[in-house]
Image (cartoon, helix red, strand yellow):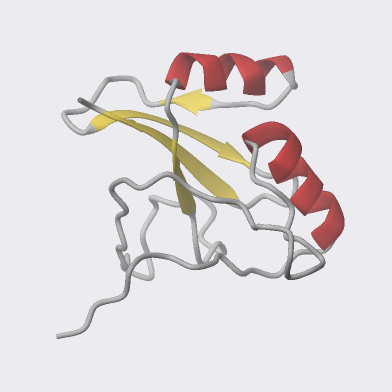
Length: 121
C-alpha cells in the first residue's frame, strides 16, 4: 500500500488570517506562507506525528464548539514556556510528565486550542 509522507499543510478559517498568521510567526516561530513559489515555506523537523480522530463529544479540546486542535512538537519545553509567558500568553502545563513526554495547552487569539509536546527521550 502506498502511504502519505506526512502532513503537507494545516488549513483553517480565521476572522483575521493575516493577524493570526503573524501571531503564530511571532510566538511559535511558524513562518508565514510565502506569497511566491521561490520562497520556501516553513519546514518542520521530522518526528512523531499523531493523527487521531476523537469522539464528537470529547472534552479533550476544551470548548465543545472546537472541531480541531493542533499539537506542536517542541525541542526545549522550558524555553518555549518562558517565551510564551513573557509574551503575556496564558499557558496551562499538564500537572505531570507522562511516559511520552511533557504537555501544555494554550489558545491562539481566536480561541483555537493548541497543545505543545516535548517528546520524551
